[in-house]
Image 1: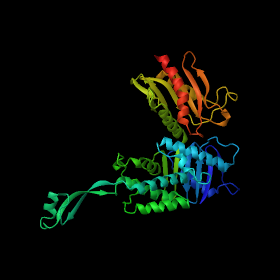
Image 2: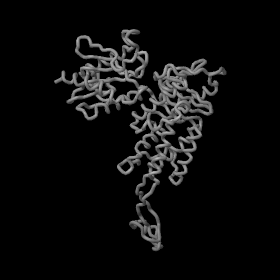
Image 3: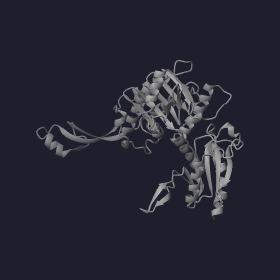
Image 4: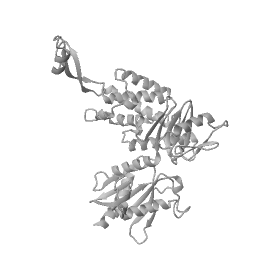
Length: 438
């Protein structure tokens, strides 16, 4: 299978030239991309099919069609002096970290340094992590639960099903209609794990991953085989007896359900695992801010607020609801609004507006009016064009008010100690702001 990698908003030529993807394979990828919910009305929300090239949009992940696969990586500014393969490897690490934080997975990045980040795609890396975690979990023992059974037995087991006994076995008293509970591994959680193993075996192109998945499929041999669409997710219960399986269950949802976005097209035509970067960045930052302020007097809500901008005069009904990405509260009052934007801004020397769009400014003014916060932040990913100054880039004051609006950047390429750095930057500013409200 031919594999290709492209960065979001970059292009991949198709045709017969060197470094190009054959046109018929490009067509298969485009057809599969159009089945995604991210494709939009025109069908080009994932891949834009131009005359001689494919252009990736603001969606990342892996699209695998018959005979080829395409990995789309986020535009993260890393190792500008390195070659393309080393840059791609350096991008995959923070992307996996972002997914781990956004999905609340406990992935120890220090334990997976032996992964072949340079040559494996994002999908194969995620499959490897899943296999490692699942192998470790099954060695400790599969979760089990008591399941109710009904059976006709020569000796009483459990309780007697009286109605069934006297209707079905009235003439055969030697056969007893029994109801009993039996401790079993054939439960909904294990069926989900088996379905994930089978699904990933079809998706993986790595010989190492396929071997690991074969071994796991053997372990799950006695578990009922349930197709992914028929899985009974509502029967899965994560409690204190199986808490160690929570991360694996979340990863299974990532692969099998529409958690972010998984696409399957036709019978064997292709599969895709895709993530919309705006949503991923928002969830990532929201969880980091929540961790940074844990144990303080501040409370964080993500996609909260829900105040409306306007009220209809005809119906006296609030309309145009707002959903700020992150609200930070103290004593019942909003002290800081953070809105994340997955796009690059300019340095002040290049553009006095820093590349901030007019629409984003209007959005922040609406938030300032509705939530009465003394400070609002537009938060972007950091890149080398902004220099070494990570954090606040510029501050503005809303005309006629004391409310501050700032632009800031966060270095997603270096996730280590990011929670501590956010705490150091957020807490002093928030404390000063909250004091003005007292």
